[in-house]
Length: 340
Image (cartoon, rainbow, N blue to C red; front, side, top):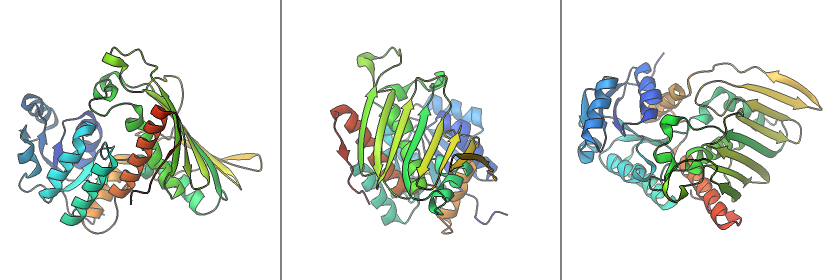
C-alpha cells in the first residue's frame, strides 16, 4: 500500500530514457507529468503529444518555476545538468538528476549545497544499486558471508544502440563511455562495498568506426580503482556485441558472481562459490529498477527514507569517473580526494 502522496513532475529534457523508463515509472506510481521542456519548442511539443503530456515549453526559467510542480526529472545532455538543477532547486523543486550529476566535482558540490539550503531532495538516477541482484550481493558482503572483500570485477561492455549514438559519442555534451557507463559501475561498487574509491588507473581507447570530427571521446576503457584494500576492475565499452555483462566479488571466505546483472532490467543470475563448490543463489522481488528508484525518491520527498542513490553518493561516483578519465589521459595513477 502506498504511503506517500503523489507527485506532480516536470521533465527537463525530452530524452529517450525519460520516454522509455522514467515516464512509465512515474505513471505506474500514480504520479503525473505536468510539462516537458526542450530547448527546441517543436521537439518539446512533438514529444508531449507522443507521450500524452499536457504542456510543452522551450523556456527554461518557466520550466524551473512551473507552478504546482513538486519535482523535476533532469535528463538533458551532461553539460546542462548543473545549471538546470540549480535553477530548479532555487525554485523549491525536488530534483531527480540523470547521471552523471555534473561534469565537475565543484559543480556537483554547488548542487548539493543548494539543495541542502533549500531543503529539497536531490538524487541521482543510478539504477543499478536498486536491483534485487545487486542488493543480494551487497547483503552477502555486508553480512560477512564472503569474508573480507579482496576484489571486484565488473564487465559492462555493450554495443551502443543505434538510437543512442548521438551526443554520447561527442565531447561537447560530456559524452563518452566513462561518463555514461563507468560512472554507473562506480555507483554500483560503492553500494556493494560500502565505501568510495581513493585511487584510479586506466587505459581508454576509441574502437568504434564512428564518423566524428577529431575521433570523439573514448568508447572503451579498462580501469582499476582502489576501494580501501579491495581492488575493483572495470571493462566498459560501447563496442562489444557478443559479451554478457557481469559482476564478481571475491572475498577471503567465498565469492559471488552475477551474469546479466548490469542492465536496466531486473534480470540476471547469481552464483556463490565456497571451497570450490558453486551454487546458484535465488533472488526474489525482482521489481522494475526505475519503479524502485521512483519509490525511493518519493519516500525521500515525504521525509520517510532515502533515495536509491543520494546526491552525495552520485557525487562520489562522479569523482571516481573523472579520476578514471584523468588517469587514462595522463597514463598515471590518480588519487581521489574525499568529496563529502
